[in-house]
Image (cartoon, rainbow, N blue to C red):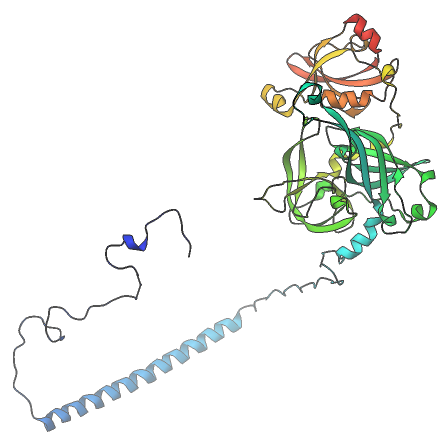
Length: 467
């Protein structure tokens, strides 16, 4: 039974609690009495003799039979003539051409889930799994104390371990290069990877990696593992992923997702492309918001899958798994970064030089007072997302480079920055006195114009003295 709203119950009906539709009802009885049709008075006539009546009936029947026979024969004759004329007319016309139906192409079945290319999921996984790694990030996070009084209420620093996934995208003379999400590796004090080809092997261990470069605004990052640290047997089994073209995707295409779900090791899920160009807003640990256009899929994307591969049925990477919609009311809504949207950024990150963190007293400074331009502020005031310069310290790095109040800083040393926290994280790798390229959006005649300038970083003492 289907109920809509409150409606009215059967007890609300005035006559009966059950209704049936029994078809049309044609009433043959008009008036009352015997059931015969009665309309006024019927005059009484005298009875006729039975033999005479029978003779009349026989005569009428003979006449009817003769007439019917003649009519039947005439109809057959006329119909035959018409059919002969139609056949002759058709014979004189050109014969009609009946198009030949195309033969149905039977899809090739290879023992697994059927695909248009004839490749099953098992084959794709076997080919692509050697390109995946599990990432473990050990970081320091500030957490609120449970004590509510005195100095116990101050935030405490604690070690935190998180897991994610990475995709092998290339190597240079000394490093193996892996792409992942920025949020997977953010704030790492120790970063290790376990190659999928080593999973389950006795004595296999994770290898230390270093951050080569990140772009927080697109949530991508590249890490590197020294080739010398990778066992020769492992290195011989690793494969570099094949990059596809996400701009050619169509809704309904089948896809495969591989990732280190829940930190248990690489696992595989399948699904389809549910939607393209979904505008999704995500929040980083530092509170900053990202608003990117993503691929939506119903392939299961779980914690730990972040940074893993979304593959088409050719085994090509068409997306970097990033997030899922989590709700008790929602199933099968996961998101991935279109690979074609970030391929250029990944190329830039691959070429960056790995930088160690510098000592706190040697860190370089820009000499700015700033405020984040979030997605919400950007939409409200029609401003670029980035770091708004509220003021510039006179005589320090930003001032000397020509930056001014009102500029919006968007990139630092070629890496996108969307919040002061992301800028501060990058500055930890640069010493005072180093020269760095900085990109800002500067307002000119009511429009924002992109400018890239070279900044020589100031020391903490210089900034404090000039402030």
